[in-house]
Length: 56
Figure: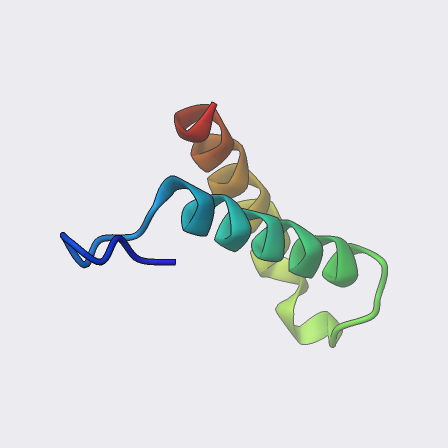
């Protein structure tokens, strides 16, 4: 979601993005997505934690 006035992402939009990244990381961890992407799980999780801390 973008703010119509500024064109920038809203907090709600960022939260939705973080939620989607969290779901994708969980799918990777549970083998629902190709294991070729498994090395990225740790980095995704770290980024999610950083984003959550900014969005609180």
